[in-house]
Amino acid sequence: MRLLILVLGLFSCVTVMGQEVVVLDKGTKEPLSYVAIYNRNKSTTTFTAGQGKADLSKFKSREIIIFKHISHLEFSATKAEILASGGKVFLTLDESRLEEVVLSVSRFKQKSKEVPQKTISIKPEDIAFHNPQTSADLLQSTGKIFVQKSQLGAVVL
Image 1 (cartoon, one colour):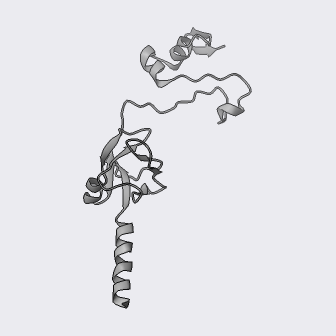
Image 2: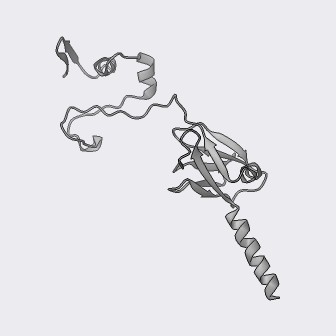
Image 3: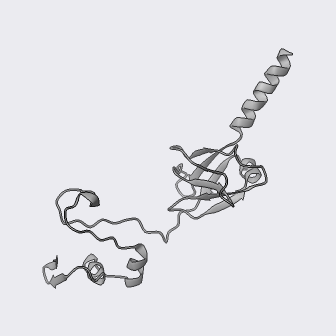
């Protein structure tokens, strides 16, 4: 009887440990945090933790699982395929996504909520559409800022 309980206990530990997946960046092989993991109808979801690890025990074996990160391309596979590959998923960096750029005229770093003046946000799609040569041209293209250009530089008013 003790042998049976020991075997069942070990089997359950192996089953639980075998349900873990690690999500890594394909280029750098670094773990990715905050990757959304869900099935097609989004009834089952989870996220990766700090070391890129997540538990897939909630998902069914033949269910297609989708991995989505803000700066990477979406990846999907069945749970059985993921576990058969050693529990590692590699996401490819999406080169078309731009990171946020903050332009500030103050001498120290501030959050946009703490700036007493009005601030505007420019979407990456707008930047790509206007294709400005300088940040002054980009700001002027918004129509909300007057930019005076001279030989010594640009002055935002």
